[in-house]
Length: 202
Image 1 (cartoon, rainbow, N blue to C red):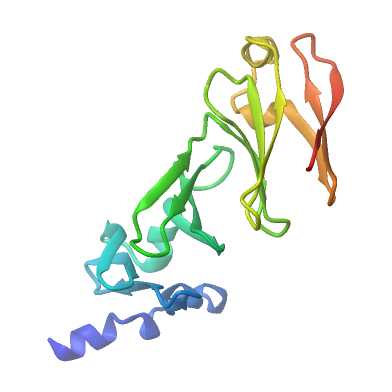
Image 2: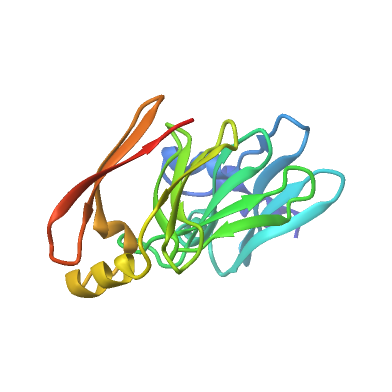
């Protein structure tokens, strides 16, 4: 039994070198940590601070296989850990963005795939609608937690989705660019035209 556990440990997994990090411990600024475990029968992602909490588990899957869909860690910020929840493997479905407490490991906020527009963890921002009425577009700065908004007329987004026959909300938004003071993008209207819009960062 002991030798079987060793054979199924993360160190002996036959996976590409670039994916081997998924079994290593991720230590955070407040002393909490995140790590994968694997025992041949299943793999699971554990958050540990004062207590342990399993965030995700997959039966009959290696760590790498388990990571392909569902909850995936992206980046640590001052007030939370940012994850994405991938609904399917591969491309072309928007994720949920999930905010996890660094103290408890519990979910504190979720931006659904229906609300999600765009995100960039290198530039530390998230663009999403406050709810599915699609009237208030929010630009969130992960570093400061500040939010800036752009209001849309009622039904404008719904009409654009319908007339352009897009499967994802994000397909209506193109050429998204951000600097210190401004986020700009092109929005596809219900008649198919692109119109330039901007959110001032205050």
